[in-house]
Length: 116
Image (cartoon, rainbow, N blue to C red; front, side, top):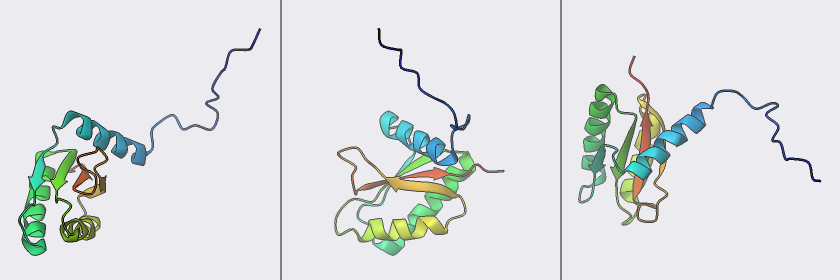
């Protein structure tokens, strides 16, 4: 009779890493569709980044965990501007592109740090 398979937990941390917690938050936001959203379609990069800055700080002050940025695919200039801007913001924990079929390259999810 074969032995029952048993997964070893040796060497596995008992708490989730910050990266996996952030990914869990983004995944939940993607599935639920309930993340606060800003749509930057039709704006040039400068106006879009200004709008994004106001949106991020407002969401941070409200205590939001995850926000959704719709920058569209287009030429990719708005996405590039957004992805250049986000790492410079102290309130941003992490971010990544949306991974659902309709969001690839057109949406970015951002995990915000907790206000203290």
